[in-house]
Figure 1 (cartoon, rainbow, N blue to C red):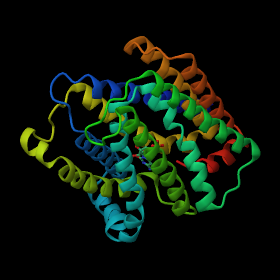
Figure 2: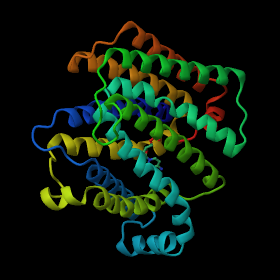
Figure 3: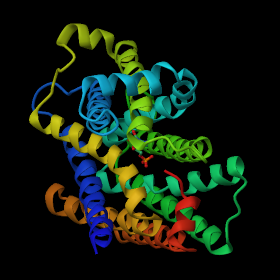
Length: 330
Ligand code: C5P
């Protein structure tokens, strides 16, 4: 009974967290009252927050609530395992890039369009599972992947027909096109990182908080480097926290909690539930964006979106939960 509550509780939490994050991030990137905050600093703050939570959990858990205990965990898991941190630097760097890409995408695309397109990560996860892990897919999974691709193409072509796509100053491409390319790139990093982690974690017994803290350490260092490489002038003129409001902090906290929630979901739920969560949160984003941000989807958009949701559902419900969880790594 308790496990059931945890499974469905974590599912409800994932839907709410995912939907809220996308809508609030989009709102924060399109409705700034003063200066727009820097995405690079927001990602950095999110990584610092995640690392603090992991360190606290290590202090309370493996460190048995003592600073001495925590120090011994840090010595054992960080100082004495530089090779482990180096191996995890690959997903740390790519997740950092991915989180920046998502801010960029949501600065240029509507939340619902972003949400349906990001389902492409199912396709990229499958591609990397086949090439890196030698996994075989059933016919039903292949059909679901083709339907997913067709759905994204339909949604995108409809969008280009209906919305203006003025040139983006940073990329020279249209805003929509730049946003779309960013989501596609994020789908690739998401797919690769999931499979890479699955590959290096096979047989590993490392505690989840240790693993996340090891990744977080590299992410924080690289995050600060990225901020100063990309936004040095803006930071030295207007400060690191320029444009920060309560809304921006809310987005940062929701994204940090969401990142940590992924590990929890995999422990207590499975991919069938995650598939439902992806479909639910796409529908919820669409309904809420229609209600709050006056989004009016065309019939073609709805058709493409429905195809993507059905494909996601079919992909995730093939095979047993445990087996499917292996098929679609996070
Ligand atoms: O969309 P996707 O599932 O790839 O998103 C993964 C998100 O979860 C990223 O924002 C990443 O930073 C976060 N994550 C994490 N710890 C992990 C794996 C992913 O915080 N071990």
